[in-house]
Length: 369
View 1 (spheres, one colour):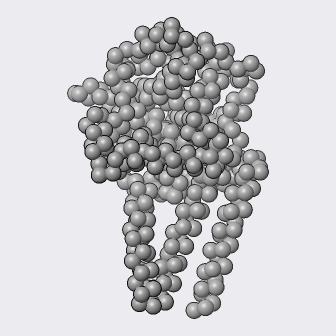
View 2 (tube, helix red, strand yellow):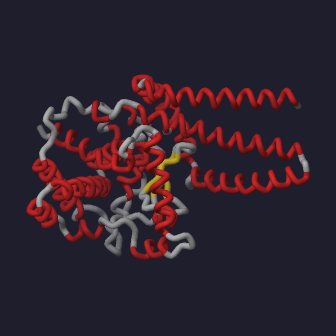
View 3 (spheres, helix red, strand yellow):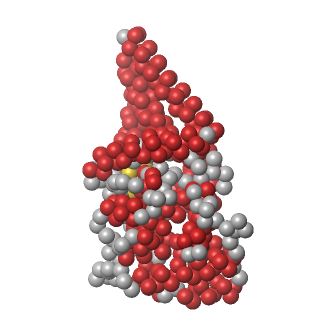
């Protein structure tokens, strides 16, 4: 029995040390992480996502629920074990806790944390980048062009009897096809994409203001079931780029937007242009003058404005009337995300999301030169 305990301790200690050292090395060598991303992570992620993709519901969501149950079980088991002096129960419970925590640490490290330290995407676009950057006028011009594309696509997309955009069935297949058009620059996007899955806990996602979420421990892309249909394809593509190893939020949003724009599906294209419009217009509001802002707003058609909601008023009201106040849940989520980003080297935290506009400018003007 003692020998088995020793083996368990040695193995778990060795795995913990390995993961900790790997996390440390990731901060020091982007080249090593680039190699890991392309040669090791990508094929492994494709294989695992093939398996998790077979399951029609979100495996990650089930694992989270299971983790909550395990927490409750371990609390009860530890109390019973201590009071009843049941050494066997205490040993089993302690090992269960260690195994669960180590699994989380392993999957977060291999499928998320170290990938934050790969070479930044903007350096792959350096051949396109102008040395003197981009002016406010160029930003406004790009935003105006994106709005006009969105206006045109709003008239082409399929709609149901309520006027809602119809989300294409095979988003995983459409993502694979769209990603293949940009794999010359981003080869890690090549190959199979699992079907993105809607979340059962979409009310909680709404409270957190989340459109989608990536689960490193199951390699799945998930989206808010209550999300505006016009936003679903680009949100799904965003989470799928995370599975492909592009963990930084600005890079995932950029890649999902341009992949959507390259799609043959009008609905997917529309979603990409709406997402790009939201980010670029947000940046224009920071830097453009009142006349430029007015010009952009006057371009936007009513149909695009109608399609461009987060969730319906009904589902937002449901989120706000939950037992735990939306503000409390949202604040906790914001703090957790901000902390995660900064711990992994993203110094500006959630503000980094807006850096996708810089990438979009490089791509847009590089492509149109």
